[in-house]
Length: 269
Image (tube, rainbow, N blue to C red; front, side):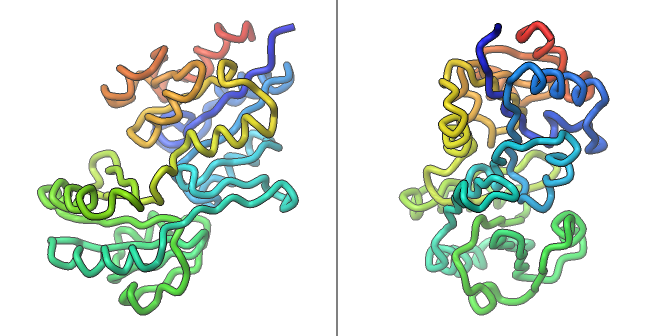
């Protein structure tokens, strides 16, 4: 009997094809892995409302890591604990003040499943309207009443490095930030020390699975910590170069069933 493994999958660019579907082969292989006693966990930057359909499609019963680790819970079971580690509202208001000096297109704050837009924004409304959150537009310094789970700054391309430099210099103690993949010039802010690895560690503890038996798949810079933390960090063929150099293994792309191809061999499925 093979030792029990925890398989952690990122969604976009990893488990999902470019048209945001789970391929038949990936689904079959993950199902087979679970039948053989392994656990599968989703670890994504997406909010829960925008990942629950994939959770259900895979028939998962495991905890789920959302917002890059800022929110971890076991759907349908509040007794498991709800781990929510938001940003402080004061820090956020301070950052908004300063951000207005740069050429920003918009600032968004997400409080769990509520989305607040600093400015009205048709383009982003589409993306964030997924899963029907409560959406509100208005000066975030006024409309925001709770500590946000995460914050996004959408700026022009040449402003992004300047804003990140300011964040690193002034707020390094309280926030971590990373940029989204092209074509979006978006900076995502979470509370410092929060990343997918933190969420994954909580899930591994729950299942009592040692770090050596964690296999994590990712493609972007919000996957760095998780890929390093996992006993086996696997970068997708379409992953950014920085992630490939940190990973233990590289598999095929998200369009070529990279997860299934790797797991079939690794777990003799």
